Image (cartoon, rainbow, N blue to C red):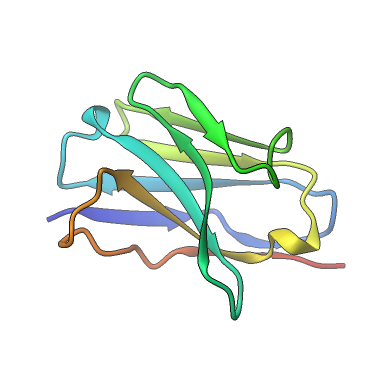
Length: 116
């Protein structure tokens, strides 16, 4: 059974930092690209960052230079280091494998709130 368990969110002031983690199970982690998505209230889920099995990365324009995606294949975990956080980064953050399949579903996500 494929599972994604996101953690590390919280309340942070603008300009602050958080590190999100996503523990994956139920598949050969190193064979898959991984992505972080986020969904703000009343908005669609958007792609934030992606990483290949070999470590190549890509980012949405809105987070370039502030967020860093990384992975530890031995721990089956993907990370999202978020620096210089802005109120518009407030959202629930999710991870997902690529390609994904209909049976994968979504994890519970982790809430990030950026507010003074």
